[in-house]
Image 1 (cartoon, rainbow, N blue to C red):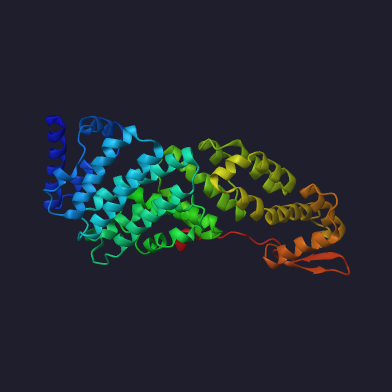
Image 2 (image 1 turned 30 degrees about the horizontal axis):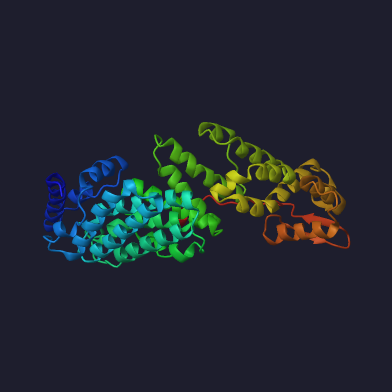
Length: 411
């Protein structure tokens, strides 16, 4: 074995031993790095070392010695391994890091949490793109879940001296990965929701709070908790720095979807400011005009885009009744000042909904079911008179607001 390789491995292990001895997590975070360039350089220097256990044997902490040996093995083999093999090695590193974290007290090892977990998520995404195997995400989510459980088990105070200090970044990554697994989102994400009890604490960085609120908003949106989704996405959008243009744009895509389901539409100025895709302007236009056929056509024409965002079915299913409501609003505006503005004949409504949906064969029974749904959800205030074939609208406020403004108060 080349003496140079011995020196590199020995120096690395000695530095780790010193960091563990003095509980210097910041120093350890600078040692356990996962950047491609750094790994490539270290890999060349460690290529001739076949057994790292002979170096880590000097470490007092046996579990940390295993973690260090696994990391060095990963660094040595990753450049030459295929995507799946590299990810498997990294999973071993994360598993042993979780065991090492379980054997420590206090928050001194927390600085290492971010590089280890972020590397795992990036590797999982890259491996899935190549293999298209859902098990990649499931395994990564399980590892993150185990680590998060360990971090949350430390209930000591103050928070800054507890392992919980590292829980926010892990919870955000777990929410991110859980949305990509084939299991129900709650199967992995339920533990991440426990962080809600203290996530707004000032001990966490603004970056971590924004990231957590964004992924929590995405999670709630998938689960159809639209108001909570709006609240967390709004917090993320407002908290994200203006210089992070692409991040604000990514948040806005989901915030627009959540707001649209509650009848709030983005302004043209907002869409232009963040250079949003033209489809959002088309959707907003057809939505406001009560043109369901035009809305769904624009949505289906961009199906791949919205499916990649996870919002396609949400927009397709949850906006239909609201677009019909807007069509009914336009009809009443046309009849303003006449008897038909409050007592709307079925014949007028049927023509309106047929034009809106593009379905010339819509019958009275289907129309009545739509009106019943609107009234039961309090999107329209009024009564149906089946025998008289009339919709009698409230004279005071037939179309009440369908969204509230107290979103931030809910979180």
